[in-house]
Amino acid sequence: MAELSASQDNEIGDGTTGVVVLAGAILEQAQKLLDKGIHPLKIADGFEQACEIAVKKISEIQEELDISKNNYEFLRKCATTALGSKVVSKC
Image (tube, rainbow, N blue to C red; front, side, top):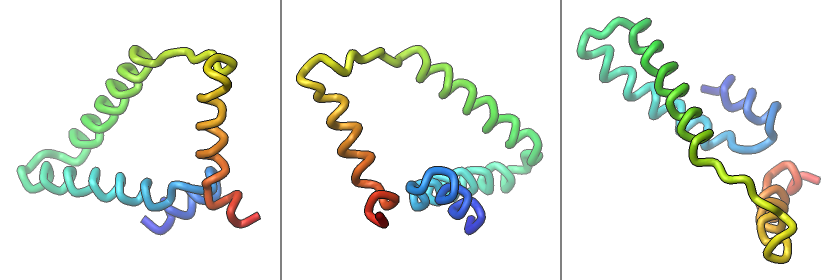
């Protein structure tokens, strides 16, 4: 978990808590499946399939936004989020 957090921090600079919480939740579910006697490779394959389904769903529901509409409202929201990260806070 420490390596996962460090990797997230090195690559993105933020989101370390979220990635550890998500990984913990995934491991918790994997443990439940292991306790039922399901082979670890089957569990890993299932998580891989779930990831593919999630990415496909995101692709289906995504919308292209014209950031110049609405007085740049969406662009401002993105900038506000980016400026709120700990990377900017350090600087």
